[in-house]
Image: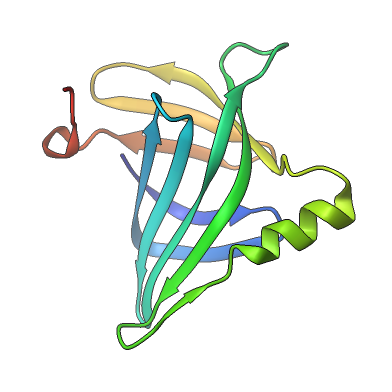
Length: 128
């Protein structure tokens, strides 16, 4: 799934203007991941998710991974989410509601008011 705009996870925001963002939901393992290629390297942000008890089309996310691959070194900065969660008293740091979905597109909004319009990459699907 691809999107353009920005990726925000807790207090970490990555400007993705004019960049392709890949967002993947691994339903079986309850994981979500955003990948974006920037001018200086690749950023991966991911975490676990659960379906909200009160809003059935909402995925509540607990980010735990952020990796910055600079080509010559990869910085693993997921510990930042642990620090933020400890200070805030919760490790759940975002949500995404799906307002429309079909075979080709998903439209949703995030907890900070961000709107996502994502298209499905049919070649990336693993339907096994």
